[in-house]
Amino acid sequence: MPARRQLQKVHDMNIVAEHKISGQPIDNKAPKRPVRPVRWFIIVGTLLAVLVGGLVWFNYFRGQMIKQFFANNKPPPVAVSAAEAKSEVVPNLLTAVGGLAAVHQVDVSADVNGRVTEIKFEPGTRVEAGTPLVQLFDTPEQGDLANYKAQATVAQLSLDRAKQLASRQFGPQATVDQAQAAYDQAQAGIAKTEALISQKLVRAPFSGDLGMRKVEVGQYLTAGTAIVSLTDLSELWANFTVTEKDSGSLKVGQVVRLKVDAYPGRTFEGKITTIEPQISTDTRNIRVQATIANPERILKPGMFVTTTVVLPDKPAVTTVPETAVDYTLYGDSVFVITEKKEEDGKTSLSAVRTFVQTGNRVEGRVEIVKGLKPGDKVVAVGQLKLQSGAAVSISTDPAPAIPAQPPRY
Image (cartoon, rainbow, N blue to C red; front, side):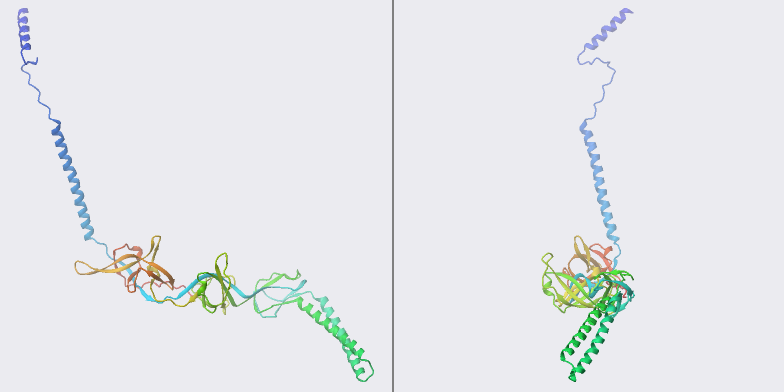
């Protein structure tokens, strides 16, 4: 046994020592070579290219389908009300703000001191000129008046007797003169006392409407204390101011139209009666006064008014309804309705936003200085639903009044 093992060991050593022998058993197979990295890069790149190409083709296909869908599914035209731009003469108006003042208005007061013994008026009533309003205590003056009247009676009798004696040569002329002086003195006392008594009876200085009572019976009044306000409402003044630039177009006699908040929808007319000859150095404005007849007595002093002076007409301009103009921060614009022919030969309408330059607004219409010409059709009602270039159809329903007229009083 040991000899056999020795022979096997020698045999194995010889095998290992042979040239190009790895040392492994002969019966073991050599391992396969690994796949090169370049081949893997080619395979992965090809797959990525196919994936990206598929995504690009899908996006292009989807975009074409969406475009085709919207091309074949156009929204229906928007129903709007249309109006035509007109060439017309717009009234040349100058607008300003101001207030009303009474031509005759005063706080009635007493001329002298005294205690109120009687109030002869009702607050809020209309009185005529000379109507007694308040009686002050005048008993001492009435007593003085009676005294002077008695003196006048005695002086008159003495004067008559002196004249008779003088005419018969039984008395001197000096006696007549003294009697005449005494009579005149008594008459002067009567006149003075009657004037004092008249001051104790306060009367209305002119016809008008009384305000609220400011005194009570028994109250002691000093001269100048207000008793009641008296206002003549038959005629009022409208005071307003205009700029220095507009002052050159104003003349006495021009018509002025007024509007007040208390009576919306109503217009009152008057005429310019006074133009201040001086321009304020602080504001560079000029004060103007117009006289307004108030036969209904519904206008009151102190009311805020919007005045419009009617100036000579200007040349004709292009106008559109006021509702057709869209006012935004980017500028004023209108939607102009245009016609175009489709491929099938039919005519369609579209609304295109057009920016314009506006001027004055008068009676529901706007002056278009630039951007439109007479005859252009614009959207008057319904532009809030539109975008520039949108298809429209003209509605047959009547457009609302522009502007809506408020009820008249």
